[in-house]
Image 1: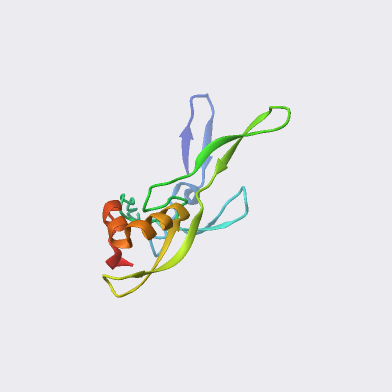
Image 2: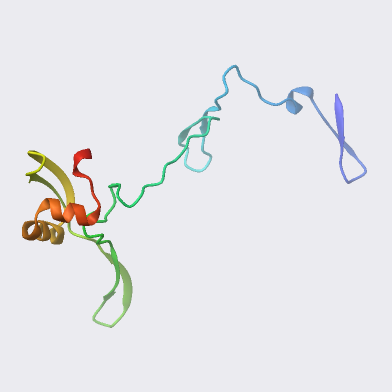
Length: 137
């Protein structure tokens, strides 16, 4: 048994099992339980690389990839002129559009304003201006 001296005048002795680091056959931590929510979390010791999305990648967020329209912060004003914050989301729709250059349908999530713009100028022109490659879809 080894003893650890503190700043005080007394010493605390710890058993050898408490001092030794916890080692397992594999390098993962296994399942740890969260004390706050009682949820089981799968944790591993290997680090994973996270790639950040660039401008041209389409992510499942409330942003139109063609026109870059996004959520607006506004005030909800009551009859007594009491203002509370609210969010005005973009009207995003899932649409299958015929892509003439690719001779196939392309499934897109776009705003209704972008849909009107595509009807006016064409899918190729709007996608080229937004920098979106339709071949990946």
